[in-house]
Image (cartoon, rainbow, N blue to C red):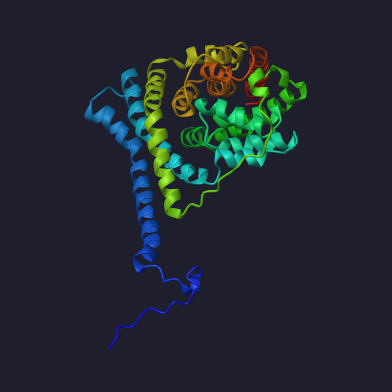
Length: 365
């Protein structure tokens, strides 16, 4: 007797004719969800024990005198170091998955053809979720120019992407509460939108480097990559490895500075330098912040310590925004595509928005 041969239906490309997926693959998703929920539960349990452990470590294990400068500094460092790193790892993983839907090429396509005003708003909002670092400023700028995106809209994106990013927002929420995070989000977006709109009104395209202006607007070819759920989880893991692996040293350094401020700087001194009554504190904070090179993960612990020691919210927000949005390294990179006059206008417009934000919140809060 001849063995049975498989029936050839001639329509192997149709789902009804394909062999069903193995049962192990069908079980992978529920198992992955269960593992994810267990991991999140473990993360939460450990997170809630960080504060009592920090007090035990500083005052019981090391036997440092309670209320001493050294004790407060150690407790702050032991508490904030794992706290910030755990928050950072979780949010980078989640946003890494979300960002798989918002590639740089797709962002460029969304903004192409958008008129100013509406384009400024969309560019600022996309800046929150689009992958960005200082090294990508030039390629993004060139891509936007080539796609015919208006200069003002491009600047709204370049301002919002580093300043109003998910790391800053989540760390502010985790360390200082939702009100401070909401204030930072709102003011940061407004600065990006208004500053981009103002720059667009000046029509300063002639202050872009000549070789950039020679780029002809053309439709970008976007290769849509089809990703599965497993692919997106892998993107989240890669984001954790790439981002956390690069910024952890800045995080620890920032927490170290914050610990010194928390433990050794008297509240009266901080209030006199960065308090509401010191009118010059806001512009001084901006001037000091611009040459500094840090990222949101590294600067937020310093912000936490400054606010805890009596610094005014407006002054601290101005300092943080200037460090992130007007960093000197980013200006050096942008010099490759912008003439010095346009960089000067960019700094003046964004700096004015930051100053206004600082003075406003020192006045009303």
